[in-house]
Image (cartoon, rainbow, N blue to C red; front, side, top):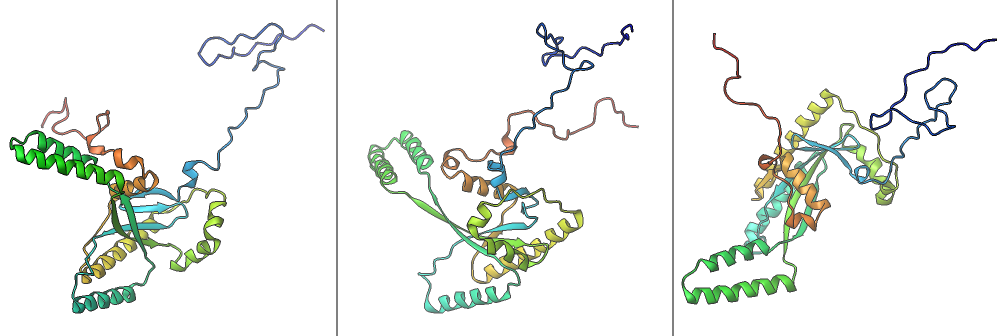
Length: 278
């Protein structure tokens, strides 16, 4: 029986675009009668940094967590409670008690200690000393610069920041009890969470509820004489960047997107070319 004439398929190409050349005696993949080799799927690393983060996105001055909940952060200024009189202390304590009783949702009070970088301050003093003509002032400035430099090397100069984290749970404020029951190690060794889907109605409801909670917290803090402000999207990103990079954030702050030198697209100003006013 004569062999059947079969039209060979297209010659497979190599990754660089050149025709595929097989070694003598080896079959060419893609031809009839040659079994296809299954492609191995790239394994996913469950212990990657992206999977360990507990937030999925930051937008509209909110941090969207991987479990579908929301967080908003309010930065607070400190007050010198020790220098107040007894009557002023009683007033602050009474206002703080009323503030806690007026809350209908949980909050988290965060006190963060961060090392202060004295390098820019010393550089500024050196520039002022270089432009000073008075010899007596230059000698005093040299002593002061040496004192500040020695103090920064011997002791860690710390700065404290105060924040209030305001959460919102779409399923209710009691929905976080299940997560709290796991404990720290239970959350640490659990598998990465799947992609959380939030529809537009639930997102708008969460956004409105978060705004109302933030306004009530800021008003309650104002009654105690504590000035506070809500962090926007950029400020939340900077705060999380400082938390995850405590060493490099001192010398390498987060990039200001308004001062980027790379090419990006933005809306032009003026009249488009080729358009005539009619």
